Image (cartoon, rainbow, N blue to C red; front, side, top):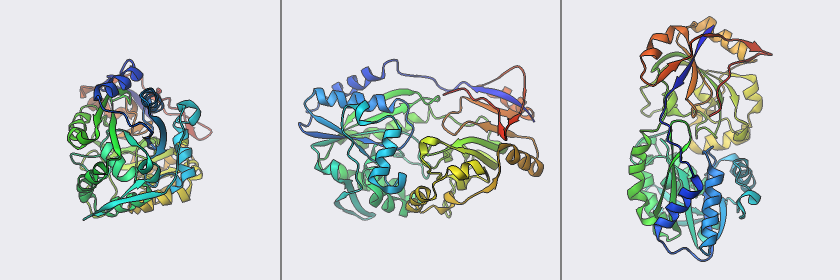
Amino acid sequence: MRLLRVHQNLVSNPLTDVVAEVRAQLDALELEVPQGDVGITAGSRGISNIATITKAAGDWLREHGASPFVFPAMGSHNGATGEGQRSMVESLGITEEAMGMPIRASMECVKLGSVATGDVWMDRFAYESAGVLVLNRIKLHTCFSGTLQSGLTKMMVVGMGKIRSAETFHAAPASQMRDMLLEMGPVILNSGKIWAGLTILEDGFDQTAELHAMPADKILEIEPQLVEKHHSYFPSLPIDDLNVLIVDEIGKTYSGTGMDTNVIGYRGVKGHEDLEKPDIRIIGVLNLAEKSQGNAIGVGLADFCTQRLRDAMSEEKTFINVYTTGDMQRIKIPATLPDDEVLIDKIKARYGSERWMFIPNTLHLGELFVTEDLRPEIEAHPLCEIDPSPIELSFKNGRHELMFSSP
């Protein structure tokens, strides 16, 4: 199989000094800083510069008289245990030593109230603090669309409420999730425990492009504007009609569903409206990201996987996360083959060798490979450039030898 190396000229707009921008944004708030323990949220996603941003925010708070600490705000992720969530936070480079502040990890929650869609919960450490700085990235959600998606409000409603809120949120139909954010968000904000929000926009190359700090009472007003702006950065596949997509690596570090459903065009939630594009007939997945620590949510969105990925999977962690969401399709095990070479040969023998694409993961799409028959479409794409010479797909010890550039 001969492949073309393709470069996508995605939007590149990296901040030159992330630390300085964190400080400038927090300075611009002109808010009185709580004098006591102030919690900073930490999720489970592989956000660029997340450790640097978290430390800069903690340093700024300390300089203004607060005693900052980090707490996991990731719903049911990593086994839904305090120890597991601490481990996830540390795997992102957010360690007590590196941050210069403690990590307080527990699954204990305090009930803030109830709304029509369910009870509203908050992490106990956050509730007992003098205030919380909600820190998260704005991103398209993998289950629904709307004015609020993944960001500060979802971090407050689901992440900070641990497994209790995650179960409530994911028990609702996807079409109602956006309404739950709008209904539960004000309850959390009215508790007086949220001091401010600091949100991140990343460009097409997963680089920190913008930081925005806002007072708590402005989060629900400003966040929808940033969701809309995120659309201009979001990377996608350059071809909408594929026979086969091979994803080199899946995992929570890339998307809440292991593979971003907005990229692969398939949400895998029964009974709910799905995405129309891209249209991909077969998906094969080869590896599980080490930073996902065994959570292979999203493997069920694929048709084929390798034994290597299966071996790296923690069934317990994956089950807890998927069971909490209720979307059991995402944990179903695809046809499993010994290695990359066998998997690719089997797909090729059954489904043909045209209209293939290889990507490193669904977050980093600046470089990918396609079969030669797609050359005319790629050449016509305004964002794409093709290397002069095609390469032959080769294998070593069953693994492909394609080299993706580091993001």
